Figure 1 (spheres, rainbow, N blue to C red):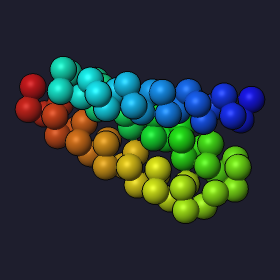
Figure 2 (cartoon, rainbow, N blue to C red):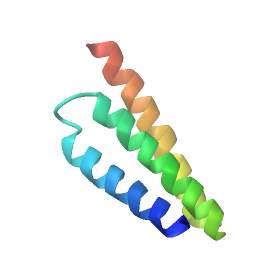
Figure 3 (spheres, one colour):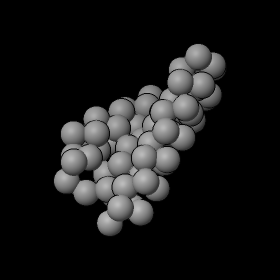
Figure 4 (cartoon, rainbow, N blue to C red):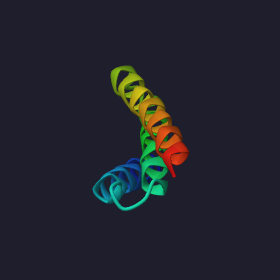
Length: 71
């Protein structure tokens, strides 16, 4: 079950990153994927990965808020 969470998180991250230029909702989707990857990292006990993915999630949320305001 935990492995599937990691796989889903990475698939969401990669696909939404590839589509970010199409719509700002994909930036939000990327942030959600990063948050899921952070949860996965916490569940497997990988604190460096947890911190890195948590930071990426916060950066993506900030980017989404900025892109939303431009629309």
